[in-house]
Image (cartoon, rainbow, N blue to C red; front, side, top):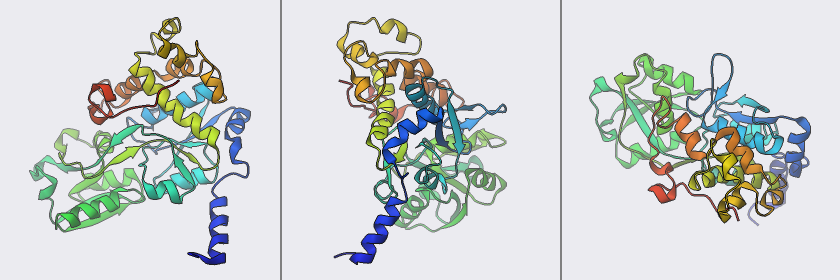
Length: 339
C-alpha cells in the first residue's frame, strides 16, 4: 500500500476540499445567481485587461462572455475576478469563481493534483525572452550569465531552469509575485532579460516607455497550451465550458461570423444546421437551448474574429496566428465536430 490508511484518508479529505459540496450544481448555481464568476488576469493586454472605465476586454474575456451568453442569455452578466498566478487555482478550488479563463498552461501535474480539469486549448503558446535591443543579443543562447526576471507561481520558472541547464549556461533569477512587478523591474534595469510566454511578452512590451527599444528573441523554449479550467466533479459544467470553445472554433471553420450568423441559420448545409441548432437537439444534450451557438457568435464572434480583434492583426499586439491557425489553414487549432 503506497500511502497507508492515514495517507488515503488525508488524500480523500484534501481532494474533497477542492470542490463545492454539490459539485454537479455549477450550472444551476450560476443561473440562480444570475451572473457568471470568471477568473481572469490582473491585467494582460489582449487576453484580459480593464480599460479606464473598468470595462474588460481580451481573448480570455471574450470566452467568459461567450459562456455567459450560453448559460444566462446575456454576455454582460459576468463578474470578472482578477487573480495573480499564485492565487488563481485556489480561487477556483474554493468556489470563488465558476471558471478560470486566465492564460493558464495545461500540464500533467496541474491536471492531476489540484482537483481541476483543463477543458481545451484556447491558445497554443511557448515561453520566450524579451531583451533590450541595446544589448545586441540575437539569440537566447547568448544569455550566459544574464539576470532574468520571472514571475513566481508560473511554469516559466522551471522552463527557465531547464533551458539554461540543458545549454550549460549560468543565470541569476530575479523573481516577483505579479506580472506588473516583473515588467517594472525589467524596465528599471533590475535584470537583463524578461521571460514569460511569448504572447505575454508582446502584451507586457506595450507597457514599456519605448516598446520598440525591446525585442522578443526567436527561441521558443517550451510548449504552453493555454485554456479554461474548471473544478473536478461536475461533468455537465466541464462539457459546457469545453464545447463553448469548440463551438467558436467550429464556427470559424464553417465561416459563421458575428455579421452573418442570422442569415446562416437559414443554411441547408448539414454541418451549419447542426451547429446553429436548426437541425437536431445537440444543445439540449448539454442542458442548453438549441440556439446556444447562435448566442455565442452574436456575443463575441467566432474564434478567428476574437483572436484578430484582441491579439491578432486587428489589435495593438499584432501577433501572428501561427500555430493557432485552423488545422486546414496550416495551424493546429482543431475542435471535435458538433454532430
